[in-house]
Image 1 (cartoon, rainbow, N blue to C red):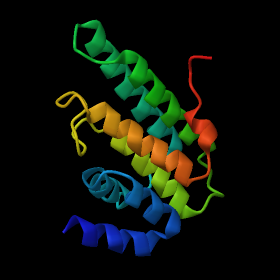
Image 2 (image 1 turned 135 degrees about the vertical axis):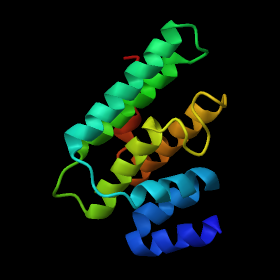
Image 3 (image 1 turned 180 degrees about the horizontal axis):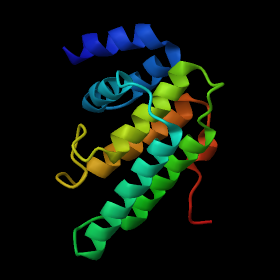
Image 4 (image 1 turned 30 degrees about the vertical axis):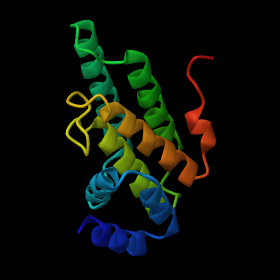
Length: 146
């Protein structure tokens, strides 16, 4: 069933989204499709969602939760970079894909819960990477260690 939903979205939104959906885990792709259906959210609200989620994970890590804070920081920065390039002059497909990616990252209950499964954050990273590359923006993926 998920593949027919993905195919419908691929046709509806075009090659960029189709390429991203085909390059990520099918469960993650299904979750992204749900976020693609959402109404557009104000850019600043997306920035706030990203920052609040990062702070929540940072607090959990400080409280002893087993969270790779370096990895979470890297992903939050990558989402921030995606949001920095978000612009009304971009094709709607690209705007929706960036919004869906950030929404996927900040949703702890996406295809793999970020805190429930050791791979949850890894799935988020895979989605962010696929989107950055699908948009032709590999600079989004540059390390924050520099």
